[in-house]
Image 1 (cartoon, rainbow, N blue to C red):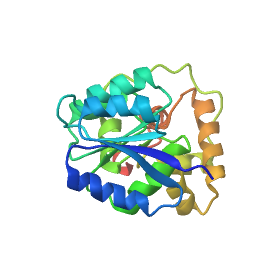
Image 2 (image 1 turned 60 degrees about the vertical axis):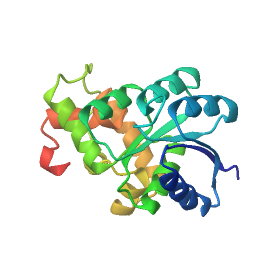
Image 3 (image 1 turned 180 degrees about the horizontal axis):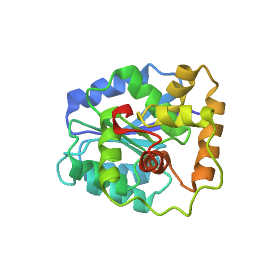
Length: 219
């Protein structure tokens, strides 16, 4: 089995060492490089071509937002997971616009970091629940992205999955909550996206909230 190749972009050596040690214990992952600033992060991504960059926001020479934008422009297939102490709206929305794959705070548990890395590698977008709520509330107050209308009603099972997805948890966690296989969760989400004519979890949740199917207190 090919390992998930990870580049750490973090200027605090102690944090970098701790993150590396957490990842080192996992047989399906390896840290292939470490960058201490944003410029190094961009350069090392081009040289090492990791599957995933774990990126801090506040770094010397080039901040994580600009480094992320440059990496996604030059190497769009490289996934970016933001791991930071900051949850300011300006950071969250700027990074989501840059097409990141995940946004976690440094308060996250080690095992949750690992499960989210695996989720991203399987194609999911992951957001810490507090970040997911911030995103949904922000979009809820703004204009709803265009949708050409539903192509069919959602089933109860599809709504059950969508309500849990609104909390920002991974497909694996949804599967555990509902006693399903992960593949079943993925299938239900894909069917939901098709029925709602949306392209992501966030858009699906926003659509459901606008329709009154999900309320903010459930997020």
